[in-house]
Length: 72
Image (cartoon, rainbow, N blue to C red; front, side, top):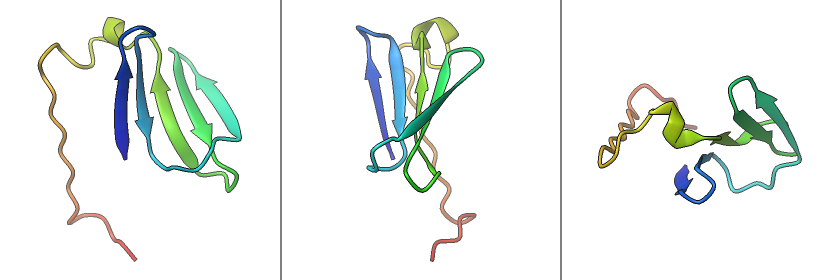
């Protein structure tokens, strides 16, 4: 997973897969979920990210807990 933020457009992008999107659905509140050819989500975009105050300046914390995931 990759996380990108573009301050010019104020968009936070969570890139879940490298597959190209073939379809997208805009959810209420300016969240766009893009899907790949196989119907799986490939990215999630948060429009007007700074206005949502989901991430405060200089505060970045990412926790990934792998023990609860089953990888095959």
